[in-house]
Image (cartoon, rainbow, N blue to C red; front, side, top):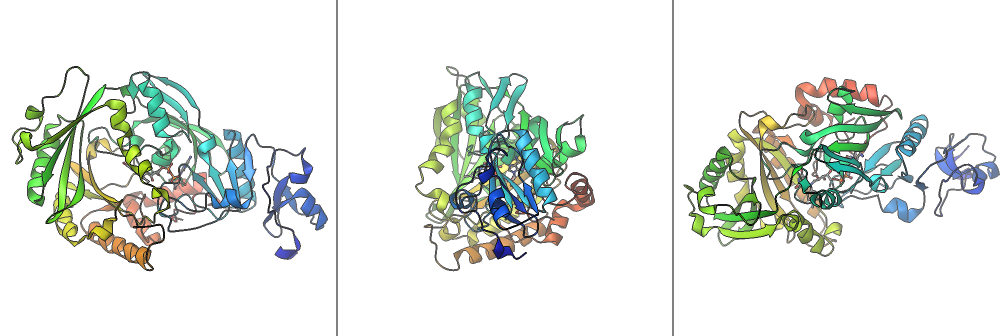
Length: 491
Ligand SMILES: Cc1cc2nc3c(=O)[nH]c(=O)nc-3n(C[C@H](O)[C@H](O)[C@H](O)COP(=O)(O)OP(=O)(O)OC[C@H]3O[C@@H](n4cnc5c(N)ncnc54)[C@H](O)[C@@H]3O)c2cc1C
């Protein structure tokens, strides 16, 4: 039967069980097209595989599919054939089994904030935003659905005097989305978010729902944390919580000299007296100004001793600009900036994100920074450096360089000046990213896979290094037909 002989579905279609026969959707297994049962009958198709009853919604209409056809990078458009807004873990099991027997590729999507098509699929997108329940919060941790946004979780935990020990700076991101990539900030001694997870519920590529942890289904647990969804879809997570302070003091120290900056940065890291240390760069009169952020949490009315915290640096503590914020406002500060930037989500964002070891970061930054123009960053883009204590990054499939001390995430978070950038902007930035990545890799660097990079199988193999055969084995075990995570492009 030709593909054309079956009417396609153009209106909004809800697959809400077999009772509503006219709108039951499924696959014509000969043509591979999504159709209604009625359309299949009309066309005389004998090969119809109906989608079983769902608690949530399966949407096939154009606006719903277009809504998940791009991500935050706006560089790649892949329109799926269907979008699942799951009402339960069982819905994800049902649709993964359905996809598997019909050879449909499946991507899980949280907030869709990766920038290189990682959450896109030509087949089915599972939009986890409908799984957004916070089941419990307590000193032993938070038990949350995969689609809960960290910002919502933080608001709920702060109400109980608790907070996740590690967060991303921007928190309108889904729990499972950041657990699939890593999740870090200037909290340099806390590990990544994936190091602060106790338990996951995962639907594998065979449709099986498994609980996994360090002691139960450990292989699956390990490969899901920072594993870019290669072996399953996270449906629920138990994440650590710690006592929340009431306020944060942000000291900003300005540098123009690379060596002085790194000397002071290392001094602050070595002392370990601050809660966060990171850097942002801003265009200055003679190049890029380094704006070192040294953050101390505290419980008002007591307050940090800034002079002591910033002692013996090349910049006097009196030169630091100091801002005190209530802790909740501190955690919202980046969300407020990003969300107040009109149209930010539509800008083209060819991001460059790379991890480097302590031994080469200074030389890399010192060499690359002077080559970057304001256009490389864009009016609403930014440059970031997050240090992390290497020993605290424990998950085997989180690809960070080896180091006895620190590793550093260096980000060029490029955004285009408008949502219709000049021709050649994206390709020029992607070429830049590749050149910089090759340079970083030669310096012992690895890719933080939230950004935009032309990356082939050989690159992925090198990225996983000695863990590659193990990744392949686990993929074959948990997703034997290779239907998951097509947008990442590892397999
Ligand atoms: C403005 C901004 C600021 C950021 N700041 C930081 C930061 O400070 N620190 C940091 O570490 N990162 C940061 N990021 C990057 C961010 O952590 C990642 O892009 C993260 O993946 C986004 O979460 P998401 O919910 O949008 O995931 P998505 O983009 O939806 O998904 C990311 C990947 O995870 C997979 N995935 C999603 N849900 C699931 C699931 N349930 N099960 C299995 N796989 C799944 C997707 O298929 C995809 O491969 C930032 C991003 C933006 C846009």
